[in-house]
Amino acid sequence: MKQDTKIINAGRKSKWTQGVVNPSVQRASTVVFESTTAMKHAAGNKTNQVLFYGRRGTTTSFAFSDAMVELEGGAGCALYPSGTAAITNAILSFVKSGDHILMVDTAYEPTRDFCDKLLTNYGVETTYYDPLIGAGIEALIKENTSIIFLESPGSITMEVQDVPTIAKIAHQHDCIVMLDNTWGAGVNFQPFDYGVDISVQAATKYIVGHSDVMLGTATATEKYWPQLREHSYTLGQCTSPDDLYLALRGIRTLGVRLNQHEKNALKVANWLKTRPEVETILHPAFDSCPGHEFFQRDFNGSNGLFSFVLNCGNQKALNALLDSMEHFKMGYSWGGFESLILGITGLKNMRTATQWPYENPLIRLHIGLEDVDDLIADLEQGFEKFHQVLATS
Ligand SMILES: *Cc1c(COP(=O)(O)O)cnc(C)c1O
Image (cartoon, rainbow, N blue to C red):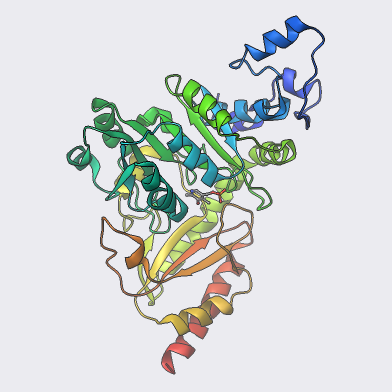
């Protein structure tokens, strides 16, 4: 089945839809049983999406988990109330005191915080590594390394990782390969084809796609799915059926949305490339992006999120640009239908294994589904304000 057809059919088993087009919103804490036999059957049937107790899931979560597995692959999908919860629970489910994990230096900031502020308290040590390390990862693996965590492209700076090379070496040393696949969105990167064992997503972003739900997912291979499922359940993770319904609705337009985000973003990035203020474009589809060759080799396409670095400017000029925007709103998320802008300085302090080479500010854009000419005009007037302030400061 081709990707767009999968997107339309994902999770829509008649068992979940009950004869209408969409799976229903099944709200439940208590599940009631007609007999002791039925109760015993449900309690012993953790693997087969049987109603047991609300925290174990309802038909709405079964439909959404199925949909994620159909899109991304793997043997099962655990659900969490946020992408961050998906990351922390996936890691917690597979480490013990005394372990060591390898974390990519460009990981989402709360992922780093979790390693530095919580895992250390539990006696789990983290070493950060260069996202472009490739086969060099082998030198960092220790006797007690249990997880190698990747995020590709990296948060904010967009480095694309050589996932299959790292995965192959990880497996030679019995390490579990986890990937934050939020940018790939389950469509543009197929994690299990490249050796990933557990793929995590902030479904908050493109899966939901409308900036109105927090949601996380973790899909796992046959080998790791039972432990991920049971440990996440033990940690008390569950999600609201209303949120899952919105996520299922989001999935139906994932293909067309991503195509349009991609098209608009490429147009904006190509325009930015002609601007005298721009030092470099950090968009995986551009050869100026570190790891671009792995994007070309492994990805099916891009989306609306990329960054660029300025070759001049200061905080005041950057603020003037940001404050002047009409269509680009300032916000920390991405993946919704709307355009967003984020000005970032101080990247040097956010990396420990690598040196961020630029002095001037970086701007991260999420290109939404507006008419792209309006977006370019918005940036153009923003650059004018930027120069006005730069000239006087
Ligand atoms: C947003 C984001 C997350 C966290 O998701 P939340 O749902 O906001 O907790 C994790 N990884 C990446 C790459 C993200 O962009």
